[in-house]
Image 1 (cartoon, rainbow, N blue to C red):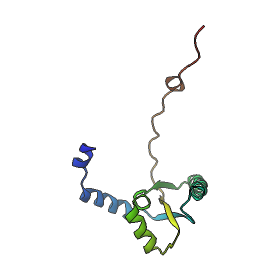
Image 2 (image 1 turned 180 degrees about the horizontal axis):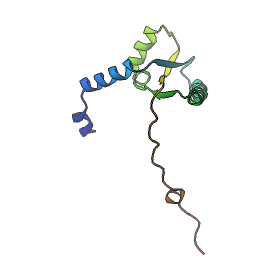
Image 3 (image 1 turned 90 degrees about the vertical axis):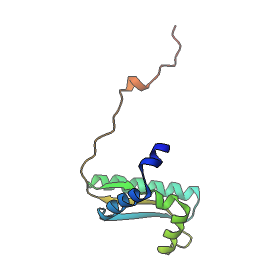
Image 4 (image 1 turned 180 degrees about the vertical axis):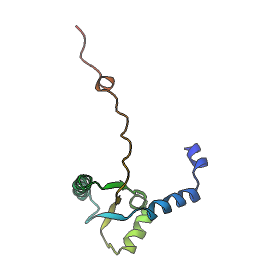
Length: 119
């Protein structure tokens, strides 16, 4: 954390986000009717269907979490969009992009531990 604070400044982060926003053709905001767990789950299921459909059509998507996670920013977002009692939970970037490399995957036998006692 200390290294991160010294390497990343607020100005650098602002510039990074300005570049991201200027190169993103579309943003989607997923909003829950009520700020309750059952509505969060429904919204998550809706997002999952959306993400699978977007992927099917070759669209890339990524989360922009901070506006929905940071209370002061969330309240400003709610006021700016006149959401009243609805809760913004997910802000998603959507567009076409170059493929990203896949995450490294270990072989199954490297991660499965046999817990049965030997005879």
